[in-house]
Length: 180
Image (tube, rainbow, N blue to C red):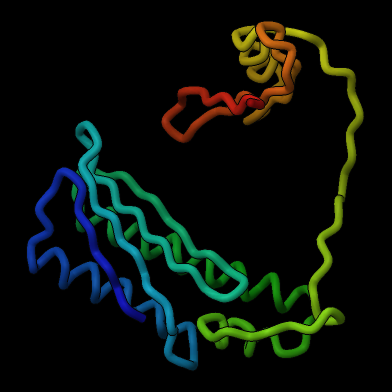
């Protein structure tokens, strides 16, 4: 696994780069074969927080962790811990589904495998809801979302009569997805 480290608003020192590479390369112990992918590490300063974002794309799985801490080294440790939990959760999920070769699937996650039509995993809807979109403003939609305790809310935007989605971002603010 190649580790690409990039800094935004921060100079990546050699000791910081060595530490990040050492910690992230420990994730390879969960795979029997060498991982043929690039682990992208983004280090940045956001207000008073040191933020570490790690993305590792694998075959059929995307490992991603984003952690903000006062100390960059602590943030790296927490990001690696999150990634370890994701790998363990994925392994457990494969084992629970009763798939044969679950261990091999995680071991071969870094290799390219072509599936036949019979082997394609089908996705299924587990719950379906029907409701009437009531025209409302963005502020009303945010209020409705908060009252329901949801992290997103679909509504008919009264301003332009289009379907839109408001959602709560990680930083606590709100986002809006609107049709063009």
